[in-house]
Image 1: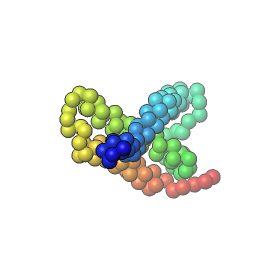
Image 2: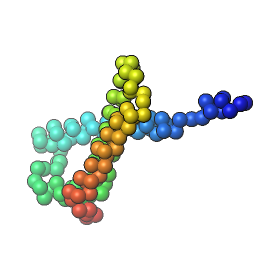
Image 3: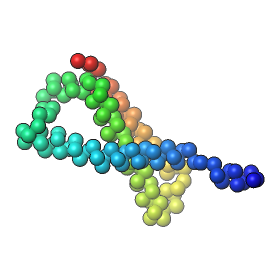
Length: 132
């Protein structure tokens, strides 16, 4: 076995990382987001289930819960990583050669990282953590 064949068999760890975020984002977005929209946006206003109302005090008390913050962070950030990966590979499938380059990866995945950072900042600054 020479050096070239060993180099070809080396796994692409960065590619694996983006595919991991893509798969988790797709699964979470496909399964949890419709249920979230159904409960918060449809069944709650109809009075079928009890949901968070539109009062500021209620929102702040719910957003202060660390589990709610983690849920919103996962829901938002993984959905954006899924979108970034899907859009990049959509452009690759269309035959856009620039979509395979490093600047395209930085643009797409960097955008998802920026959205994740903004989400973390918003979740940490909107409501103080409360465990009760």
